[in-house]
Length: 172
Image 1 (tube, rainbow, N blue to C red):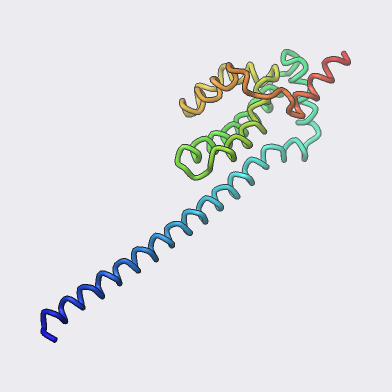
Image 2: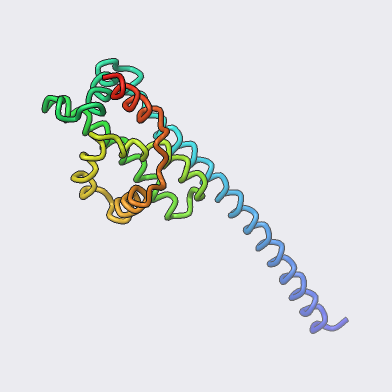
């Protein structure tokens, strides 16, 4: 066997090692991507769950939301500020979902579930009025996306908060 033959064998072994390394790296990248998407989903899911905590933990805020959704004009300035602040926090979390979807960290089906759990609230009287002015402080593509969905009538009106407001309004 000549030195040239040994060099050729060495090159072949190096090529095989390179291919094995690339396969290993591709597998690692795929696993890391899955882990990152899972962590992103878990984080967003927890954050979206925080939308209801103030209402669950504060009967006054729950009553204020019912009051505001039945008759937004009945809210005092302080009550409107509290309701507005809660909506801002909730929509900021949804905005994060939108951006994570744009970045490819969550898929469309997950984004859709998070959106439907929250943006249907924007059809209620106080929230609808609030959104008409507050949307200017949100990420423009996010605001435009919500406006398109609302205008197209894609948002179901069967969110529990909407049903509560409607049933309360009908009993008046």
